[in-house]
Image: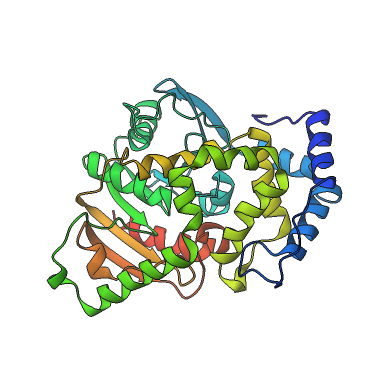
Length: 357
């Protein structure tokens, strides 16, 4: 299915914008401490404008097993990888990611026999954003409709990290009769707890969260409070869009498994050509305004896989406050984008967990 056919004029316009980037004044100190490094940005923008082969990557995207459907009045895009047998699996990405991050992982799982569904989040890539903020059909219900009603799976498993972990948690909470188990790379925090019950290990985790928010959470606060103001610059400047996501690809990734230039630029190009960088911020705003249902208790079997260079690392006891944790794994390497960084490690953990279900 040729979902994306960028016109010659649109491609030329992007390259012209890149060549005419209006660069900010040099920061007194080089490096990444205050944001995206100037030298790295100039190098990548130059490559995006002159050397990066969009047409090759466009062809690769169009060759993926894509499908479209409509749920709750909005277009939903998903990839389907058919396996020979086993439990169907639903994979959900986070931000600033897309379905592209999950393709290698999905292929490995399909080779192991699982049928794998990789939907695009509403407002990401080829899935339209939902028409109203306070939607009567939240994303986890869209996912259940896709898996159960559209695709006909009576029972399935689900995996997610970042935004995808929250959606996966709500899906399992709402539909334990259909969701056989969930595999997470992040967990929800309980809404309330007795401070006297917090262990030393849990206190260290809460301190880790506080330190991360202070050092890294500026983007999240802006996206939760004023995403529309931010979106004007990101939608108008490809260099600005690239800087906004590049910083995350660097900060949240294992230094031993950095993303190559083409992958980062393909993600940026996908956001640019589909015009979805602004709508990809919407889940943060909805969460900040408490429009997303809280996770209160998940009873289905839950696996937690933590990668050392991910954002935070909840101990098993903390996860068990909300989840029925039956598998807990600390990985030897990898970061926030583990599906692309370490697909073999993640696939092996998913296969081991879901094969038992």
